[in-house]
Length: 152
Image (cartoon, rainbow, N blue to C red; front, side, top):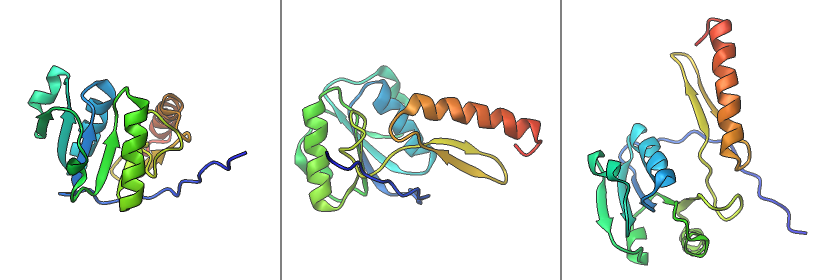
């Protein structure tokens, strides 16, 4: 039996860091918006894109992924519906020491995205170990608790 990875919670400055998102669907769009919210410089590559990508301040390449896109990237998100492609991107990023989030795996990544709550006083990140719907559910419950305690 393979022991599952243990992820260390970490807050990291993404301001002006070069990030790559591979994929043009809903998950890629959501993760791209999150990266932009934290100041990242984002490049997106995919053969097809949701229309909303065109309104974002990102560099878009409408083509298939090639390894050269990884050059000088701080963080990579593989958010395609091709599990094998996402795993290949993970393997390359792992060898090169690049932070990588894989939308189709709980293990084949070295970085997870969190559900985030931000208030004037707090920044709370929630991970349900690769189960984003559970993270969002807890996030919404915590927001209600913070409101009740008047510390939102």
